[in-house]
Image (cartoon, rainbow, N blue to C red; front, side, top):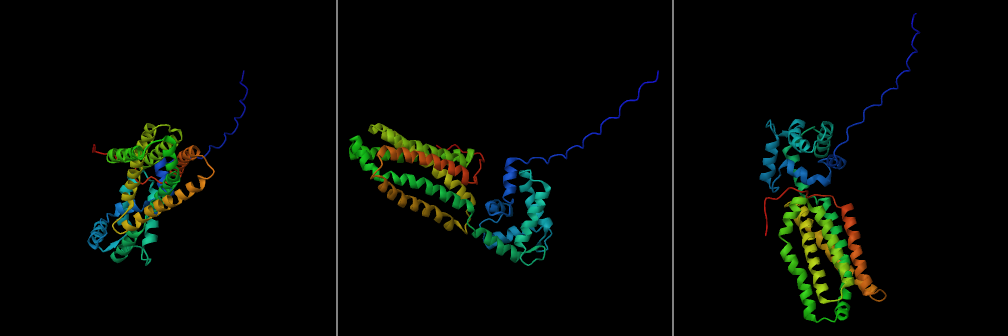
Length: 323
């Protein structure tokens, strides 16, 4: 017997378009800042162009190195050869590399000729070296947030000495413990910053400083005070190394003085404002509550550092083993 005709199959639903490949987090972060053209990546751009100490000799040598055909002009192909290594190390897609070259030419080609002459390159290279890197202001904000709570506890130190019933000599030993541990930790912590990066040490050091300050609220003997100060010294050593590493990485001979000035201003502002706030609090807040509050404020500062600071001294490894 003839078989019954099969029912027509339902039309298949159109397939969804393939999703674009998700870029690695590090690449997406670089692209979101405009790759090399954004001020946050000025230190990478300086490294790619190999501008050295920004002397006339160094800038001329950098121009001649990039100018592969020797026509005293930097064309798109010359710039591509410079940027392709940076892009390949970060798995940057081809279209983003092309966009970077277009943005660089649009920013540096001031006469609209489509290429860069030596005078244009020299003038804009010097301007690049003179710019203060944005991360300097991020680090300055971190320094202010660290110095402010530190200054708040200063008006309460005489009361702490009186409450513990210790002598001035004992209090001096406790203060010395902070600088002793800072002296011992200062050099070894630089290797740790090289291995893990500056941001983890910056956050961890701030948290450790908060714990040491909060510990003052539970201090009942001089031994507790010495231990708390010793922890503070280790934390301060870590913070110093974690701030210096990115500051050195982004500064140039042309902006070094202007790059360090915001650090001093932030520290002075925190040290000046902190004792004033502490003096106001001393009239109606218990000493233990202030110490606990200062410790908590350092933990909040660590959260703020994690949010506002852009890692500029990533882990690179260290071949040294400092004592």
